[in-house]
Image (cartoon, rainbow, N blue to C red):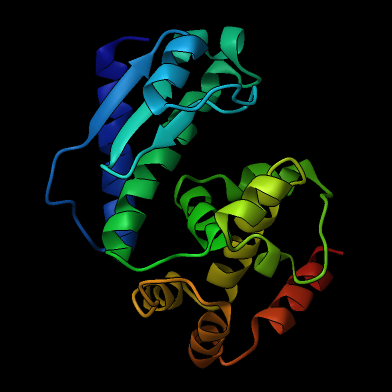
Length: 213
């Protein structure tokens, strides 16, 4: 796949995300393509990455992603997965722009990125997945996310965000993100969540799970 294809996919992703979130970036995106996992890991300063890890957005809003031509050779992804994964990483840049210096729980950050990159239907078709009680709470911090990353954390975050958008609206999620504190403190987050959604996080998790069954 040539540069024109990647530029076209990036431009479409930007157009889609800006239309949903109603914000624009004050800077140009920087996207680096990598032709090997070794090169990717060196650039993101992370080694022994899992076989599904193919993209990263750093604190400077720079995106590192595998060249789509090596997806099937260097990862568990198919070549055709590239557009949605690129869009997922671009979504993280917009979410960071939306949040400013506010701390977003990991499940909300990753779930929204997956919603914006059209991955909800992908996981809906997948079927059942691992879940625990109060799973959102356990997936809020980087430590908790890393602990459960191989236990369908992405699936839960993606589908739960889809549930919230379907039953409430993307504007409610935007309102929640822009109301967050600079540092994450779960009791404060729960208060803000309940105020905006008029329901507790635990109750909506249960309703979400019941709808899946």
